[in-house]
Length: 332
Image 1 (cartoon, rainbow, N blue to C red):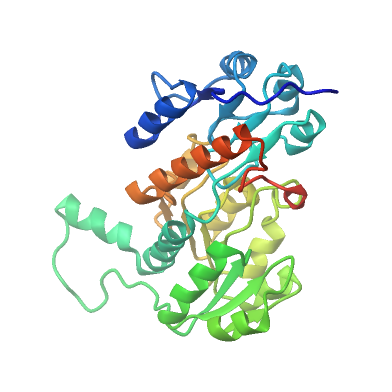
Image 2 (spheres, rainbow, N blue to C red):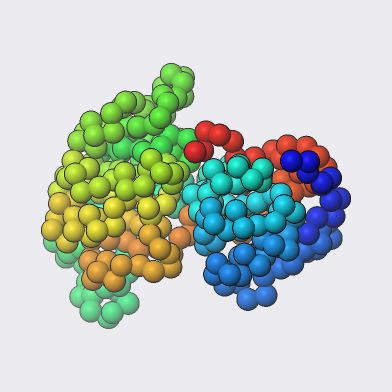
């Protein structure tokens, strides 16, 4: 198939409202259509956008499946995702159609690691429960047995996924006196292990049985969907805590609710959920879980940096070069 030349001023359709400086710069550079109401697009609206675009700029709220990609006209040549995760895009279907997919890695590392560390502290120390108690007006003052949580210093932290974010979490955790363990598809270099004081586990189950807190930093793929199921939550045990700032789909949601309700794990800190923005209402009644509204990358600095990466990817592609953040074969 002979493809047409890439347009110097491509038609770019953006599915959600982005920071003002990013939208202003896109308007200068591209023939851009911005989101008028900042609501997640349903399938019909996505199909219409894909039919009218050289470049689509989606977010994690847009489910771009094989059917949508196969129905898109040949003019759609680039999906420049606003975000690091691409589990919501059917990469195999995109590659089969010759559509380039890019993301925005790296710029979210520190913000997401900060949020994971905040949850590692907040859940065992019952910070949200304490805040609610003070706001309720029912706090009667300090007492020796009131609002006791659990010390994290000296405990073992298991990191699932030791990429940029996992390593940033490990550095923070070590400063708080946690012993760092990790499971990853590939072992990180020995010098990095030494700097982080990290112990590698080739077997995920063995790591879960050895740690007190599990924090998830793996991408959502076919192989990671439901990876943390009832059996693996049982390995974490009744004194174990689960922290998830990656993707909700990595944890079996029914198994997690059951484990929290029955005390099979001590508690959880969650920033992501299956079928966002829907949250299982059974979680609301549980005092041993901290619930956040997907705040991992929610800083002014991080969201603007994401937008600048999107712009750089589009400009590089439009100039005939491979975009710097093209999602490569290893994501599948």
